[in-house]
Length: 321
Image (cartoon, rainbow, N blue to C red; front, side):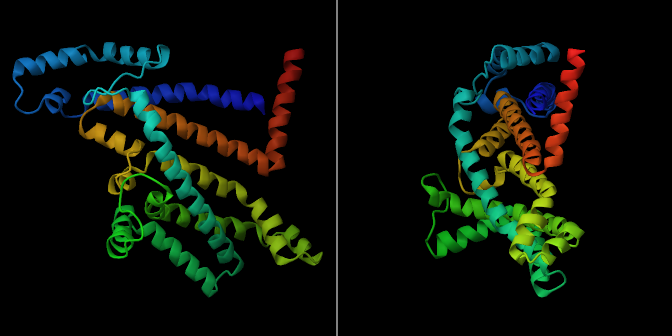
């Protein structure tokens, strides 16, 4: 298992480099002039040219790319924002915990609501409980995040005054953003849980468990759900990774200064260093999420653990010979 984890971590190196090169290339050839945005429309051509020279935009593409990769991955110098002059590493350290807290909250709500909905839908297949659960899942996929966010603000902040409409502070500031951003996760988990449960709920070992006198709760939770967890874990891991980088709309509407808002502001301001470093950081986080998913596979399925163990033994035998 340790060898597998090390191998996966090493694979993150070319993935991260690929993301860095891709984002750098896209930002370089995207329309817009950073020097004009920084200095304003009233700047003279001489000051614009001086600013381009200062930012290194007059250098050839390959030289700029090599300098960026060297500074980021060799010198570990993430640089500073072109528009604000603030340290990018400090900005990420300040904003990432907010995005992380929001993503975890959304994921917890999605798991708490989505998995039970899927279980109920599978147990009560083709009954009203199943139909109601799937209608709720369909609505969760169909309702846009921004529209639901505005509705929640109007209801709970403007009309009722129960919760703050935007900003950061205590846990009450994360309730509305989490509710607005978890609908897609709830829907995906409910549908996948239902599908996974239906695949195993009529298996022979489920019938045997019922014949032994086990309660329906034990049959469902100990046997059916446990053996259908692999695709559910995949959905959880992929959605959590997307939430880390996909909370741009939620953070913008609710005024949460997180990673999503940082990157979208940098894109609008053509702040290339912030976009590039932010994208690299999110790619690394997503890679670790996928590594966590693989480790959870081994935790819930003894067959996968056995495969990892057998691969390690084969390597040891080969090396010894």
